[in-house]
Length: 56
Image (cartoon, rainbow, N blue to C red):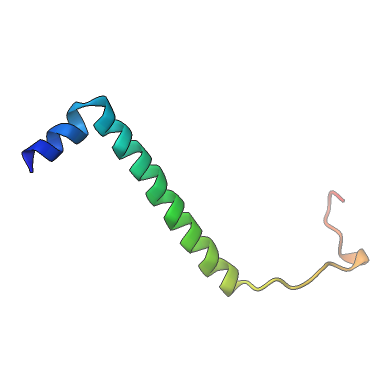
């Protein structure tokens, strides 16, 4: 176990593994949360012409 920690926190390759793993973990979490949000808030279809936004 000590060898794993010394590799992860003591070498450049270990820090790169931690960085890439963290980015992949956050990407996976964001993907799952986006899918859950998409199921919760269903697309309501295209807007009508009189429902344009303030800046349009």
